Length: 141
Image 1 (cartoon, helix red, strand yellow):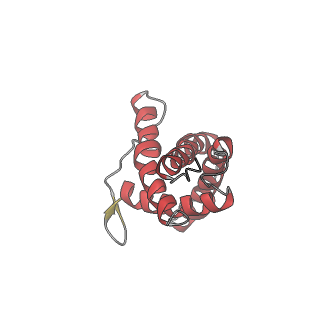
Image 2 (cartoon, one colour):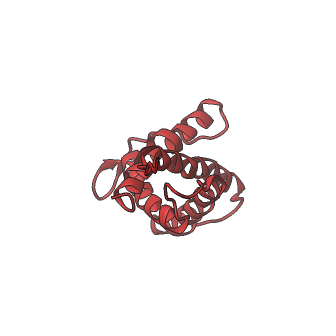
Image 3 (cartoon, one colour):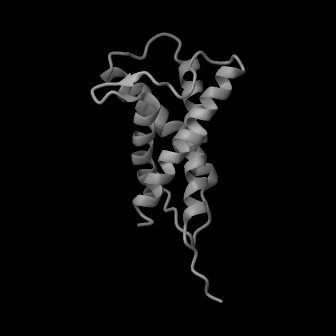
C-alpha cells in the first residue's frame, strides 16, 4: 500500500493544497494571470480542470516516490522532491501536454516556465509532506 496508494493519495492532495493554492496566491498577488482551482471542463470527461490535474499529479507522485526512493526508514529527499516537481512536471506540461492540446512552445517562454516551476515545485514538496505524514514507521523499541 505504501508504494502505490499512499503516493497516489499524497499527490492528489498536494495538487489541491499546494499546487492550486500556489497558483491562487500568485494570482491574488497580481503576479500571474492564471488563477488556481479552474472549474473549466477538462474534455472528454467534463471534470473540472483542477480535479483532472489532481488525478495526473497523483500518477506523477507514484513515479516521484519510486525515483526518489521515499521510505520511512530513509531521510526525506526534500530538495529532490522540490526539483522533481518543478522540472519534470513543468517540462511534461509545456513540451508534451500543451502541444497535444494545440499550444506550441514559442516566443518568450520564461514567464510560463517560471509560473509552472513555482507551482509544480510546491506540488513536489507538498507531495513529500503528505507521504511522510502518512507513512507508518516501525517502532523498534
